[in-house]
Image 1: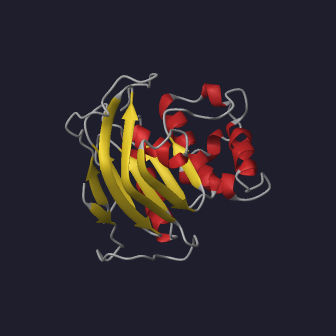
Image 2: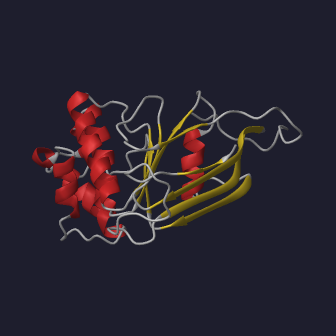
Length: 232
């Protein structure tokens, strides 16, 4: 795959962006992913700097979720290199929230770990951004499917991380919630954040790079190994 440099809001290639988050950056060089004895994709190059975004597409099982998890350090990189400047926040199918706690308290727990203590405004702002403020005192397990999805996105917002990795962020959201996601992503990019999203459907990311993962021709590395999970 060729190297891709993202565009800023004017459509011009740039190494910098807005200054809300200092020096946020993702650099992928010749990255390959191997799961379950198969090379899912190879030769992926991508550079994202402050204020830039990319949308990763491709068929089921091509490694979109694995790519995000490799960038987080949750999966090993089979080949190539991954470099990230700035804290990361991942939103995927895992809520990562205490189901028995009220929503605001569950979010505050992670905000504290991320360096944004419960006494700050990050959680309140995140709840407001996802229209969840009226549910702040409701236990997480009582939230509907759509509300839980918005709670996951609120967790990412409350983290204060400059780099957002979003795995199918639009799943389970109705039209009104998609508008909230649109505004949250736009605000994050305007503040100098980075968004790398994997999705089967289009997302309201303006001036974004579109990446389509594809499986390489089978080679000697497509051999059985010690395992590995199937992957979207």
